[in-house]
Amino acid sequence: MQYSGAGQRQPLPGGSNATTLLPRPDTTGAIIDAGGGYCGGVAVAYQLLYLVGFKPWERGGVDRDLARFLDLEEQTRTPPYGRALDLGCGTGLQTVELARRGWDAVGVDNVPRAIHQARRRSATGSVRFVLGDVTNLAGAGVGDGFDLFVDRGCFQGLDDTQRETVARAVTDVAASHAVLLMFAWGTGVPRPLPRGAEPGDVAATFDGWELTDVEELSPEGMPPQLRRRQVSGRWLRLERG
Ligand SMILES: C[S@@+](CC[C@H](N)C(=O)[O-])C[C@H]1O[C@@H](n2cnc3c(N)ncnc32)[C@H](O)[C@@H]1O
Image (cartoon, rainbow, N blue to C red; front, side, top):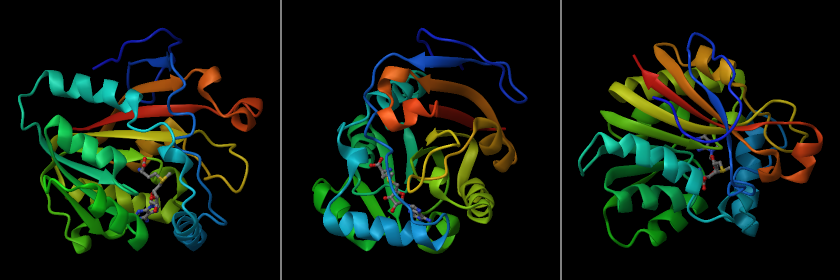
């Protein structure tokens, strides 16, 4: 599958698809986050951020770039579209949108305050929020057979060991031909922002998955401090083979 949009193409590792520049800046504030270190420090940083209510990744509201990706995934399905797991769901802003669109949605996050807010947000009961770590999805009790995973800013903050563990954990609860939509900044992000992830690294980490698409944010969609350092922000699409 290939996503539309004006922009440049670049070869993908092991694939033939495109990188396109997203035309709008609506994920500008979406993935700015903090982490004192890239291991336990990330968890502490998020706890502090939720404690003080600093959630810049929610500033844009429902993510319109994600919505475009979902439009494409939904084109070939009829509602209910299937099971969707929002990895590092935060307060569930995007998870609730998944449910509204017709996905059987579950959100998982390891910050109790975020999950508490997520549960308050979802009055309908059509979405479930689980307090747990993305590296231990089975232990968290999220269920299995997921057709879709969304990772908007979680993977990029994990250390290498956590990344390998989460990739295995996702695969263990994934349906065959499941799809993962992930937003990550590229590497080179200044501290205390998350370390970022390059498409090739993500593809190499998710054994048995194919990186099918990469969409790059247009420079005007980038926060100035990242634009200055020429850091990319990208949506990735991976499909389980
Ligand atoms: C940048 S925020 C994005 C939140 C949400 N995805 C959104 O777009 O609104 C990243 C989220 O990942 C969560 N997170 C980070 N590491 C995690 C882990 N190991 N297990 C579960 N959640 C994690 C954080 O608590 C935080 O809520």
